Amino acid sequence: MKIARYLAHGQISYGLVDGDSVKELSASPFEDYTVTDHTHKLSEVKLLAPCIPPKILAIGLNYSSHLHDRPGPTEPMVFFKTTISVIGPDDTIIRPKDTTRLDAECELVVIIKDKCRNVSKEDAMSHVLGYTCGNDVSARDWQREDRNWWRAKSSDTFSPAGPYIVDDIDPSNVRVMTRINGNEVQNESTSYLIFDIPTLISYCSKFMTLEPGDMIYTGTPGEPGEMKDGDVCEVEIEGIGILRNPIKVE
Image 1 (cartoon, helix red, strand yellow):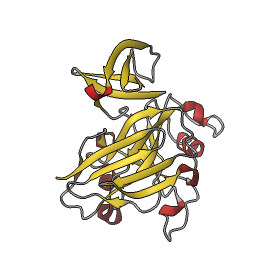
Image 2 (cartoon, helix red, strand yellow):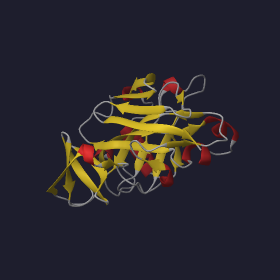
Image 3 (cartoon, helix red, strand yellow):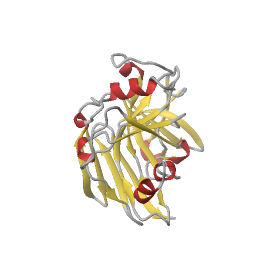
Image 4 (spheres, helix red, strand yellow):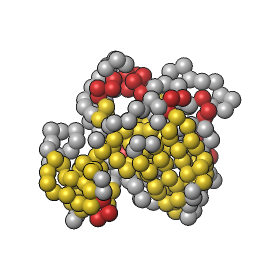
């Protein structure tokens, strides 16, 4: 199943993607819905971020290839990203004029299906609606200098997500990739996650209630690439698609 959130004729809807068309749903995928006979060509709609999450949890240092000479974490390193930072496919990432380096971080993003708390690892996947592509945009100088990551990770436009929510992939073994102006800068399998997705869901749910539409950015591999004015960044995850965003200096 592949679900899109889109704008058509001034109305925002969810739809089931079928080839080059999208069939409107009667309600959101987090509710009981039916697939209607109201159909659009994908080329005729504006794809939006696949949902507006109540909250975004993100995981730092979750690939050994991203650690460099740092020791690995003994438990998931969780931080928040703001919902106001969410943008969708083809929306512009704004590079703040006073940051010295802005990086792209490709990430598999988990979309939570229902309200849950204290979830076991064995039951965790039953609370997942699906997965999407995410870019954990990061202002590196702010990340180093600030006492926390409030602006380095959550400034406006710093959480691109999309293009679809997909439920029929194996999240434990898909490739996540970043290209900047067509040049590949990241490419690794989620099989190298230090903490796998059931572990992340269970861990986060120990401390707070997870809600329908919550996003969990699961971490980025390797060495992220810098995004400059006029660049185009593509995050691709096999089985989901390509999240494409241009970059413009503020």
